[in-house]
Image: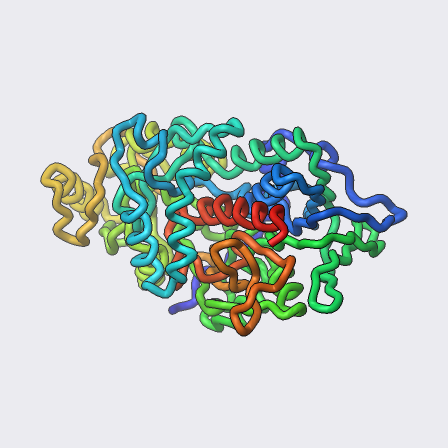
Length: 482
């Protein structure tokens, strides 16, 4: 793999924006640990407050357990806040309402194929068989998951998101946060877990520090690790894949692999650590990810010769690799007014100045420095494939609309580190396993901190499914004193 463009992090700006999106300041989420750093005691400690951590906390609380959540960042949400495209699930009420026929078997097959059969089949079975229940659970909590689209690698429309294709992540964080608050779950922000405590092989809680670096202990009989992956830890990234040295990241600054290190220290096994995914459509120089749903709704990728060069709905690794072969190792995401109207997430890209736009293809080509005849020919050929239902160039099998409604838009994009598929080895109950495959009593994990679910490549929309399904499983398991 060639070296991608370097991305300058805008983590602070994004954090402020996302804080506004979920409608609260860090103080409104919870109060950080006090300056006195008093020791605490509870039944279950959840480390991390993204989609997995909040789901786990809610389920453990519903099982009758007292729960404390610790979050090192100033606000809840983690990488879940940045999720845009949707949550994959088959056989949901949302699909039925708009006439989509789908099956768990199809979701399972797509996931295994997308992961190059490196996935743990037991975990994929749990993911796909319980994803629809997770969607219904979220809807019961107040989530809007009525819009259903398609992400790369999926054979059916199964990616659930809010009405109009609005970004899904911040919405789900808001729903889960409010549910946790209503249940009285204590959330300590600006509180960093340092160590998982054990005694005679039993989990005893954690050592944490508050924002003033005062250390304290939270005694507990179970710990759920939901700290996310290590996409923002350049040292860990290059340790497992040196070819990614110099790549930017779409991850928030807290995704540094802390939970992996803490769990390994108490005997946890690791799996698939070398499997690190790049996302192909990231804005150069600022690390802002353009959701896969733009391509899913019909956009194409063109190079500086004004030509398509890949099946836009190929898996992320394939599209990333193809983009790196193009001049300047970037490409342009090309779409029209019809696609803009089909996906409200695009409005945010326009407001932030990511798009180049024009009233005609010729004018857009001139603005991009692309040969207008080539680009016009490319679009005409693609529209012909849409009409015929046959992409003769790249075999794209889902072409929902032609590109013929002025205005026309383009966003320059290229690959950046996006998802770390490797992590803690777990079973289908969310229990963390040791090197011999034996569950570590009282230790659970969920979300991107774990490995095995996605194999060699994660499908778009499967991350949120993973977070919610295994977050709930870990919370239920811990709540039942497994």
